[in-house]
Length: 511
RNA sequence: GCCGCCUUAGCUCAGUCGGUUAGAGCGCUAGAAUGUGGAUCUAGAGGUCCCCUGUUCGAUUCAGGGAGGCGGUACCA
Image (tube, rainbow, N blue to C red; front, side, top):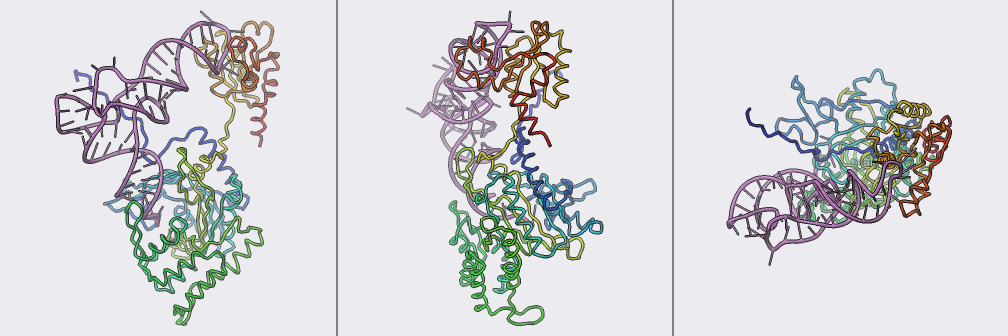
């Protein structure tokens, strides 16, 4: 211990995929969340909150094994050796919550929640390992009317966030159609079904050729990486391509007829031959969903039927929907970026059944708040809620700080952000510089001259900056004192309230 | 996981065909100007040239390995 040990100095750094949030980020998020919440509330939804951790077995079929306890999720073992995980979405915890409280919950249960979720994966553009989602779900409503509500609410949310009609689109589809088609062509194995889903999901990314390869033998990308295909028959591949290329329900219906003529239908559980497993799904779209959208005035410029919208997840059982931005997103380096969807969801009638054993239908969607924020930020469409800094009361005479603090208290009582300068007051210029850098609307000056006359100087920093734009030399700048005026001491608060920056801010804060 | 590009001051980036004191702009600090924020001028601080190993008399520079960032691709229960 004689010699000084070299002190360990940790490097100031963050784990990959995690980030600090600046005050501008936080304010922007708050504004976004408030707008989303307003839409959800309007639709009759109420909030609920669940914790960050869940037992791992409650979160899906993924169970941490001892070899790879953290693949995809962040997991750890509690002191009783049970595995728990940070939630990777908000749907699985909701299913758990509903199952656990099923007797207390009034169905149909309209619920929303927002919060951080965590994924132990490689981060991508606008993708982090901790990010925020904002979900809404209707539990206990089996009909497509509930799905229609979700799609319409997504559209309204996009517009509430300032994304213009035409700059986004909600794509909807019914998984029953695709599931039926797969059944008809004999794809029953789960793994193969998943490959087909994933292949179709990439239709807008890789186009027809790419999907054709993925449905068949496999696809090699530009980097030489090979993706195993679904191994479908050529004639079925052609039909599936036709199906997902359909731009209207009528077209889809025609393609499905071709399937029927080739396969002749299947035999169902009742033993009926020539059963068409995709008919039910088609009926839901034509006879129910489309009518609801039409009646409510949600045309194809907002909600569009799209057979290539399948979503990669296997737990969806009916309608699926996805919100997509239709403009190009470029990052801060000016590179165009593959942005993908900013939200999506669908009907998951089997998730709660995992816990209860009884069928509980549910439908819901999730908005990727963090992703959406990145997109809006890159577009410069983000309202970062910039508010003026505090009014700074300058310290001219140290023995008067009681009086300065009193001014601060009066301003605060009037609801105006204010503070007395807390740095070294020796250099007066520093105080104004501080106020300027804080984007303060005003500085308040009372030295002995002003005190004797019973006045204070108000320096309107925002207006002063504008007024002085033309002043080039420092002498004039100093003698003209742009934006500065005297008021009676007892008029301080009133006069500050009149400043445009302060007034605007106070108005904006009214509820 | 796989492929490509990148990493030099707080930030954005030059540069060194392998050589002595590694630069610029912006920012920051101080002063010109001790009661006036900006602009201007002057001065100053600030560096493990991402890390490790190797080649070499000598490595920020070359080679191998690693980490981190960005982009693509896969995975996303």
